[in-house]
Length: 390
Picture 1 (cartoon, helix red, strand yellow):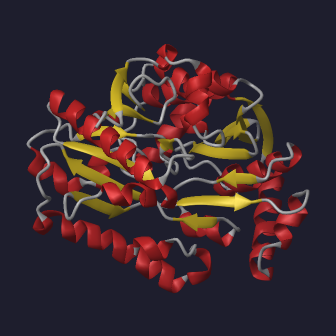
Picture 2 (cartoon, rainbow, N blue to C red; picture 1 turned 45 degrees about the horizontal axis):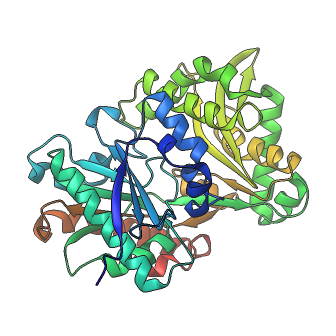
């Protein structure tokens, strides 16, 4: 029989025709877009290679997988496997755990695969991409290949690829998204329970009393807000350099332009004390980062205003339908209307060895226990897709 799928290595997305890439990438996923990936390349955070799956002799892409190197020095909890797979670090014999497959942005990852393919062919494409990714990791002397932040559709697509016990599967951070009803901020408030609505009005009112806000092109604010984002990460125990943050913010600005990459600056007595980063892609507004000063500056609900209320107002003004409020502070965002959606991590040993369940079962159960308890306590906040994970 002729070979069904071949996988080639492409060093830059510039080597792939735009139309060919756009035919397979999800048009609603900013992190699959040609603009975003090329901006990463220009910023110095490029994938180490792109894996491109095709039928022999055919130009159409069946599936693709950007592969990123993972270095412990990055320190960002949103795409740092050492913090999600700490149990593996002690057994890997290396401070570099592996390659990140798909997306390292910390938002839900949809697989780049031709959705028109029948299920059996899609499985063969994903298996070929997974095997090719493991081969790259072996060549680079890395013990694992990671698929991070998989959304439910990606779990289902990868399920047939998963062998019996040949992988690590962990529940970690969740994604939060807020659908916008009606045409303005009052319509959003009307969807909240009465007590929450009262609290939100109070938070907005106190914020407006002490803070002035300004929405500016992200490009103009990067040097101001990058150290503030570092401050927030440091409070959560994460080493994170200003240079790394600056590169990531510059990538957003380069990919989206001034009209779609913005910063909300929150000023108290003229001084910027907090900021949120907003990125528009089609009908969605992503809130990608939050920063604030670390000097006991007044904090009249700066976080929820910069990360939720001001982005919601901006999204309404732009006629958008959804605000992706991101990972972290999930219950606080859920109380303010966001849906809490599960994300999952998978790790494959590049040698194909079965995981030592005595090593990784306890951390995995701790993560599952956390989400089970949260869901049991706050069932209305959790989508039914959690059944599949927990």
